Length: 127
Image 1: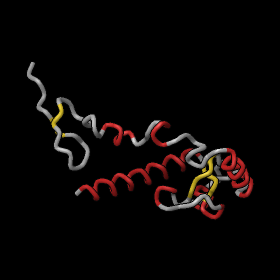
Image 2: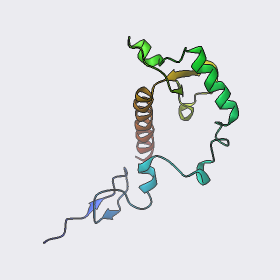
Image 3: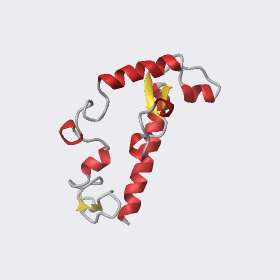
Image 4: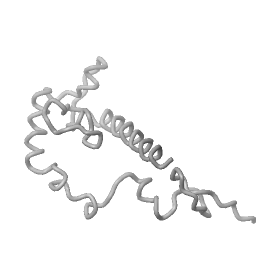
């Protein structure tokens, strides 16, 4: 059976050719979107220690435990997380006015959108 033709790395601007579709070794971690704690720091080093836990409970109480994006869309859903409205990666702060209670589904959707924007910014800067 013939071997499949080599394909380029999926990372924008990378010219490495691979035997199977995907990312080269250099860009494999970029595709996943996370880094191990030894590279990025543990939750306390990133600002999510005991102070964050207290603030998180305060925000959930302030928002009556309800998902704010769902409320804005006319739905009532229980919030399980607290989210930065403007993400810290995009210049947001952990001030109370930049935090909202959010359900798992809304949080996953919002995080995916933020990740896509970050990938676009990264690929645009490489071009």
